Every structure is written in C-alpha cells, then in structure tokens.
Image 1 (cartoon, one colour):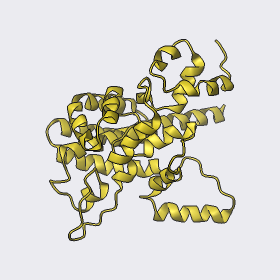
Image 2 (cartoon, rainbow, N blue to C red):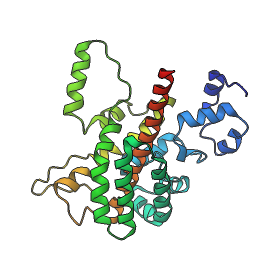
Image 3 (tube, rainbow, N blue to C red):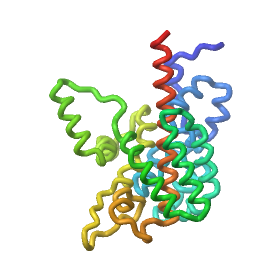
Image 4 (cartoon, rainbow, N blue to C red):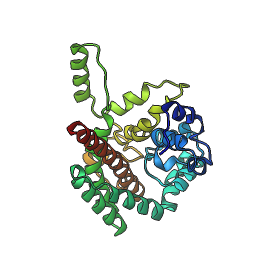
Length: 272
C-alpha cells in the first residue's frame, strides 16, 4: 500500500476543480484524497468553480451539497435565477432518483426516522400529492436545517464568551447559517476546508426567510419553512417548492449520515 503524505494532498488542491479530475484521480491517490475532503461528491468532475455553484444556493435556496446530480448542477449554474425552477422540473426524474439513492445510504439508526419520513415524502410527491410531500419534507427538514446551522467546532477565549455564544445559538437559531455565511466578506475567497461546510448551509437562509403571516406581508417566493408552517397556501405549496424541500432534506440528511459514521469511528477507536 502506497503512503500518501498530507503535503502531497495539499499540493493537489489546486486541481480539484479541473474538468478531468475524476480520470486523473484514478492514478493519483493524493488528488483523490484532496477531492474527497474539499468538494461535495456531486461536484466532482463538473469543472465549476465553488463560488459559481454556491451562488445558486444563496440566490435561489436550491441545495448543492450531495444533490442534485452533476448534470443538473451544470444546468443550474448556466441558467438565470428566474429559470432555475424550470431546470429542476426538466430534470425532475433524475433528481428524484438521485434523492432516493442517497436516502438508501442514510442507514444509521440515529437518523432512521428522518430517513423513513423523507422517503415517504418522496413517494407522496411521485404519487402526485406534492402539497403533502412538501408539508412532510419541511417538517422533517426544519430540525435538520437547525442541526446543520450549528458550527461543528467553536472556539472560545473564555467561559463568558461561551455563555454569550450559547445565548446567541438559542435566540438566533434560524439565523446561524446566515451569520456564518456572512462572515466571509464580498470578494473574499473561501478557505479550501470551508467549501464543504458552505455548500451544505448555503440554501438554509432562504429556507428560514423571515415571515410572520401579517396582513399584507408578501409570501416568500422560494421554499420557506415559516410560510409553510405559519400560513400554508396553495400559492406557496407548489411542485417547485415541494421538489426543493425533498432535495434540502436529503442533502442535509446525507451529510448527517457521514457525521454519524465519523462519530462511530471515533468512538470505536477510543474503545480500542
């Protein structure tokens, strides 16, 4: 077995967005490792810069981590924002098949309820009951989005700073992803190890767009947890939003599956 040095992996980061990366990675272990730890699986081989893909999630609330499949991702980044829902409808069959495949991979017992319910939401959508599918997917998706919004590692200078953070986490739970994304200012380039994280949380601010169902208040024009829960309407519970809700739940759940696997591996190593 050949040994890959971490520096060798670091040296390959500049090539992870090359269009031919999948072919090159077959004979380059360092590049393969660099690709796996720096880019979502569905980005591999697309040749698209991270900022271009992340813009789709931020502007339209469409998940880009794990889903959709690469060919759909390519179509989304070349489409104008107003045309992106049409792109999703055009590739509906491919997206649903991809979500079904990813849900099958979510087999950890810690997330069995979420896996089952998202699978039923997908079946409801395919049976023509998109409103029911969306209501269920949003109900499951809310705690998943809250889980994803909490940073995995947070460093504190003092106990007081930790207490302040805990208060913010509870008070601003729907804004945590927004705050984290905003920490990267205009024109700043993401650090290579932040791309995976931003890909996961980039659509969450749209999902948690503030909406209080006040008289005359405009309903968000993209998938919204608050509009679905506070004022469900035919206008908002659309086929487009239902499809995105299933994609969002699948995206985050598949990432949580990976997290479960890491935790269990760490626990197993600690027991040895």
